[in-house]
Image 1 (cartoon, rainbow, N blue to C red):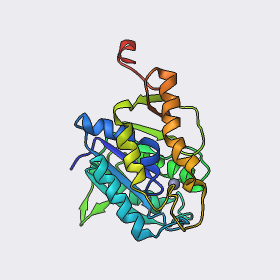
Image 2 (image 1 turned 180 degrees about the horizontal axis):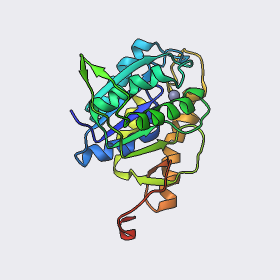
Image 3 (image 1 turned 60 degrees about the horizontal axis):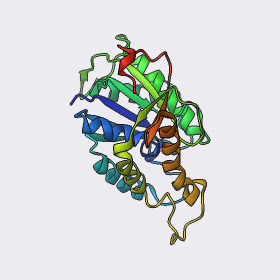
Length: 238
Ligand SMILES: [Zn+2]
């Protein structure tokens, strides 16, 4: 199966928190979207990896994701090296996405910046013919995605472009709340964390509202780029 978009996240829930409105919108436009989680989020204070797996599946179903894979890298400790790059390259060559969405370039959680660079470097390396990868004994063709965009998660990074997600804000919030063990729940008996506060849950929606306000729509998501965004026509912008 060929994907239009592959969204890569260090932890299950990174994508839902940061760019699920954009993903829901593109799926409604007929695009095929996959998610690659680098770790199972096993160091998360609340819940267990098994609960996270179930929540990730539920969120993917809500969004209409075509495939969701997890590379099982070590939460908190994975590094950007050949071994980890090759695992991502295999996935890129298997699904041949045109666009890759990856973690914020820097963030509160150290895995986000690491995951961002690891995914981006892998996209570049995946296009090099002399890096040979095999799946089931078959050599894979090189593949370099046309675009790599970085979503924004905890830290308020200034976006380079924003996407109007007004008609998909409800799907976004529903996919976020699929991670019931992680976020605000007044009845939870698990320890409090920065992301389990009501303030954090509320911030997902008010950030989207704030980005929307600036571009004159109800809700939006922001991204940063590694090279200039180019447009066919200046009349195609909203
Ligand atoms: Zn994360």
